[in-house]
Image 1 (cartoon, protein in one colour):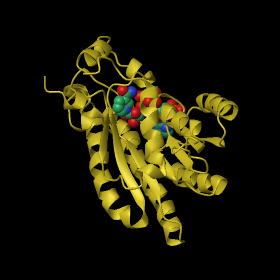
Image 2 (cartoon, protein in one colour):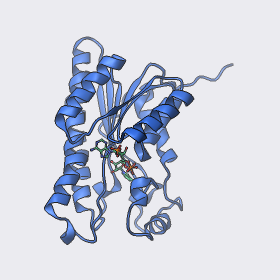
Image 3 (cartoon, protein in one colour):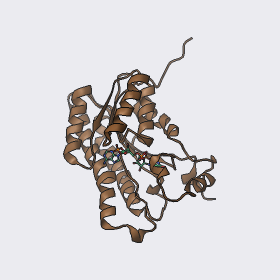
Image 4 (cartoon, protein in one colour):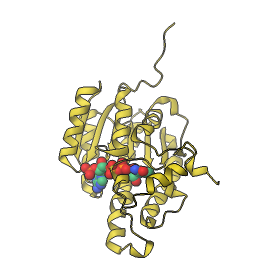
Length: 263
Ligand code: NDP
């Protein structure tokens, strides 16, 4: 009797926006460990280069990196086109690139701070989703349906964090958009889901000025700790694999049960 690797992703092509650090890098590592080809977008050439080195050395699939700023519509359009040209297709797209500019309170969120965050977290995600969907629908109409669009949301979709109202607005908008996308794209075999991670200790999280935040989150999490980037690799593999082929329109909490805790 032999063991079957039901999560083998060999031949799948996965794009991760903001894949050169933090959660995006963890999504990319998860699918690469399972054999997928990975395309990573980020603005920082040095971080992109380091990731390309790691992936080329460690993982069996192909890897490419591109300097794409998701807030620039034309860069996104060109980035999707060149990714499809390079790899022939995109099977899964993790819409993950984002920033978090926490302020002392709502009153401190200036219009430039608000607009700068929405430009990346919300509008950049919209451009990416639309261009990826255009590719997947065209592929479906040519007789090859399927695809998985995965939005990186946040617990702020449903829980309050003072000083992050602009961030919550963007995440909430994306979560709402994902439901309409799942309904509209389903007939092409395209699945759309949102992941809502709890506090995950990444560069972005470490940049939070509130030093007590990690202990606070750990104490409020039934599993008794904060999350780490490796904690979200499994859901990335699942949502890329054909084993999730009937799973769409969902918002999946990866948070140690913090998001459902009342007491
Ligand atoms: P990091 O700061 O570690 O990573 C952010 C990533 O986004 C980097 O790869 C960065 O690359 C990229 N990025 C930022 N702006 C742009 C842009 N304009 N165009 C392209 N890429 C961009 O943060 P996290 O990993 O923590 O955050 C990633 C996602 O996870 C975000 O959407 C965040 O909201 C979400 N999240 C994080 C949680 C946490 O606790 N850490 C919890 C819940 C959700 P570069 O600088 O090279 O552009």
